[in-house]
Every structure is written in structure tokens, then in C-alpha cells.
Picture 1 (cartoon, helix red, strand yellow):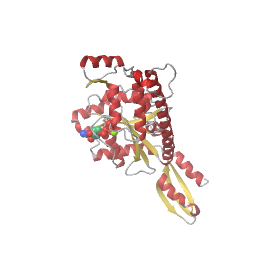
Picture 2 (cartoon, helix red, strand yellow):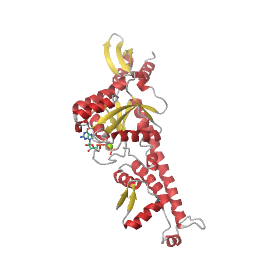
Picture 3 (cartoon, helix red, strand yellow):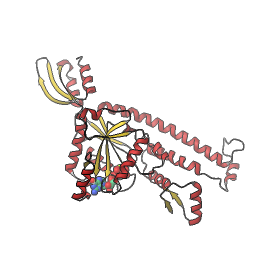
Picture 4 (cartoon, helix red, strand yellow):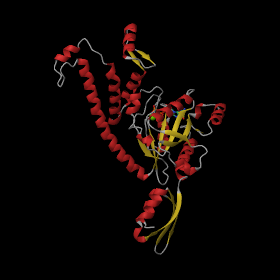
Length: 358
Ligand SMILES: Nc1nc2c(ncn2[C@@H]2O[C@H](COP(=O)(O)OP(=O)(O)OP(=O)(O)O)[C@@H](O)[C@H]2O)c(=O)[nH]1
Ligand SMILES: [Mg+2]
């Protein structure tokens, strides 16, 4: 097999195939094959099937056997439609069908996401493929995610709570990795998978600092996010409340230069000098795990406000709710009820106050 690290036109592929006498595939087609092999959920499979068909449709050509098949009587064929046109039409129909199915799944996801958002804030891990997103996801959430030294190990978005759990909880999501010259259909088809990133309050961009091409990989990630309508804004030098203020389609982003364990001291120092806005970490280091967790928690807490709320005994269930949704600093029990000093985001405080009719 010959793999060309570039986009090939159908004709180029055909001619090359004839010339070398072996199967020829291009970059898009290779990426599609890897995706296909790694797809696990229904959603990922649908997305890849759509991308694969979109890729295949313009590459169909009249085959010597085409006329035979036409006479074979495939239903619904318009008069004078060639086998090729028929095949193309069936692919279009199939894509439309798959899109509908995917839209239904995405709608379910959207409901699930909004329910989750009510319960906590979200941070999404994004970045180039093989950067170490899933490794960090596993460590930050103390869970099992698929980690492997291969491209596109993760195709599905998974969401879990940050551990040890802050109050209110923070949700972390792992996402599909990016790669340069990603086929456009493929980017489009992963829109719904990346909705999780689109709706996250904070992006943690992971990059493999031990890879000589990491700067280019950062650019690629920014470009792909841009295609998805997301601009990223570095957290550096911002006063905290501003960190949460969102311009349309803009997200605060913390850059993690990962795999620090593979670098020598001089390289580390120069990287930190080059990117003072970044944290240089290793997913394999326990101390670094605490550093990143604390940075994430601090980001959300920077936006907290403090309030002292009085909860009468009759409404005592609200105290439990405060413990679940806010950080309780102090609790004093009196004759008529409990006085609770809490820190939480403005929406959460607002909800608590409304429940207490304050
Ligand atoms: N030495 C070292 N290796 C790491 C570190 N973080 C991740 N790795 C390795 O890098 C490889 C890729 O890690 P993953 O976590 O699967 O990367 P990913 O970003 O989720 O990759 P995709 O899902 O393919 O986009 C694995 O072999 C990890 O063990 C690190 O800090 N140091
Ligand atoms: Mg992964």
C-alpha cells in the first residue's frame, strides 16, 4: 500500500495506483480508516460513516460492471439515470438519513449537557492527538479512560467529576484530538462531539512539549477550534472575574505544556520563558496533578461571591443543598435555624436566596 501525506484527487489516486501497482490512499483516507477503527459509540460511528460517505461520493466512478447492476433492478431509479448517478443519489440519501439519526442523538446530548451544567461548571481538555488529554482526564477524575500511544485513541467525549471533588463539583470532559490537515468533512462531523468543548467554561489545552512540532500543533488546535466557532483566550495576566466573562464564542484557556518528564532542565526553563502563560507539567507526576487540579478549582472560585444566609428550621433541606452546590465556610446553629456563610457563583447564590425568599 502507498500512503500519500497529502490530499489526492480521485484521478491522481487512480493514476498513481496504475503506476505503482499497489493500493494508494491519501491522508484523509488514512485518517478516516483510523477513526473508523477506533469508533466505539453509536455517535462516533455515525459521524465517521457520514464523513466516509462524503469522502467517497465524489470518488465514485463508472465501473465496467455498472450497467449490469443497473439492469439488476435497484428500486426508485429515475429514467435515464446511470448506475453512477444512482450510486451517488443513494449515498446522498444515506447521508441524510445518518444526519437525522445523529441530530436526534445530539439533541439528547444537549439535554444531558444542560442538566449537567446546572449541577456544576465544566472544563474541557482539548488539543492535538497524542498530547496526553486522556492521561490527564484519567488522573483529574480518578477514572479509567482509554490512553494509548496512538493517534485518535479517543473519539468520544466523556465527562466525569474532578477529584477530589470541589464544592460545587467541576465536570471535566475529554475530547477527540486534532491533527493538521484534518479533512474538513471530518471536522464538521465532529461538531457534536465537540459541543462539550464549545459549552465548557474553561478549556485546558494540552500539548506534547516533548514533540519538536508542539508550536505548530498549538496553531492547528486553534485553527480547528476556530472552524468550530471557538476563539481561545489565554488566562495569563487576567484579573479573575474577567476570566469568566465570555465574549461570544471566546473561551478562557489554560495551556498545559505536557510530558515535562521527558525534558531536560534547560529545555524546561526555556519553555517557561517562552510561554509564561503556560504550566509545564507531567501527567505522570503526582505533584503536578495537584497543581493542575488547584489551577482549575481556582479558576472557578475566582468568580465566587460570599453571602451569609439564614435558614429557618422549616427549610432545613436547603442546608444540604448548600453543601452540594456551594462552598460552606461556616455554620452556626441558633434558636430559629442555621446561619450559613457560603461562597458560590452568582447564579447559585441567586437560586439559594430565591429559595429562602431573601
Ligand atoms: N512521558 C510522558 N508520557 C505521557 C504523558 N502524558 C501522556 N503520555 C503518553 O502519551 C501517549 C498519549 O496519551 P493519551 O492520553 O492517550 O493522549 P490523547 O491526547 O488522549 O490522545 P488522542 O486520544 O489520540 O487524541 C500515551 O502513551 C501516554 O502514556 C506525560 O506527561 N509524560
Ligand atoms: Mg485521548
